Length: 412
Picture 1 (cartoon, rainbow, N blue to C red):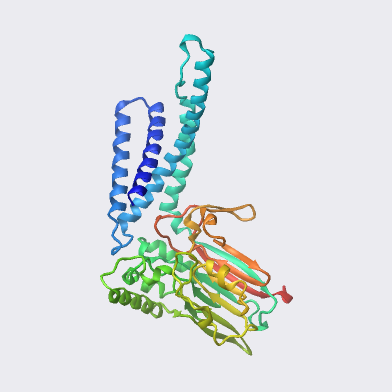
Picture 2: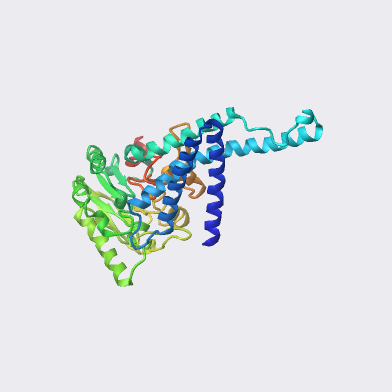
């Protein structure tokens, strides 16, 4: 722990040093420089005190979200400045050594030439891009809901389900909400869509059942479609990221979280399946508890959830963590044609221009992090999430409402 704090301080001090060098180069007024230093110190102290005193029994409160936002808002732009000026310093060192050794500037040759004002101006201009982006992400981006429509074709989809529309929501994280009007807009946008089945793929809360107290009525307004509303749990719904006085207290919170789903009109699937019937055909909706590769919990039991199923059944699997698809689902002999997941949020930061670019730091952590993936006739869709967590904003990876239309290939 001590080493991590030392590394953190080292990086922050290096970034602050270079940012101040740029500011001092551009503004030679001492009062401005002192004001800059005072504000920088106050922000840094607030961030450090907040993170150092983080209480797992309380979770991510407003102060924590504010500190997280400031960390990105302030230090991402300063890091950009540091990169520019550090590159300049490397060049200055080599130039200075060359001039000093060669005597090319005569007796006035300097070992370190003076910093160029032009480059500091360029660095400040470049830093404004992440600053504006992160600020927009906090003020507006986290509520910039997008309805993403996707058509998926299958060889073995029953005829009666050709054209079925599934709406998927994921990662609500109600404990981060703070703006009723904006959230209501998201709910209204959901209800404006035409869908036959609504599924939620986990992370209703950050940690605690009470986080949904102010939002139950609003989310219960979501209309009930022909085939109903179903849900599974995500890693945050178990309360595993909090400190509890006892296992009994943790379990009570968990029971309260599970009890929320019927209040908002959802059937919670806990390692089980249900049949959705249409005329003479049916498809199977399979819902498992959270199962994640690596350090994440493995509460899910795919075998138990599929006990009554056959490989020939057409199946839609709800599994919060997309790593589950790669490890247990994709090559499974039971043949899960469509898996719906969430979890990654696309890290709430990236660049997406359909048909041109799709990038997020999430791709260095998750193989499947947003959108549609497939192997043969088995598909995975990863929802980017409705809410936000940790960083109170979204940049480029907008909150998502997914509308999937299932089509039979022979009819395409």
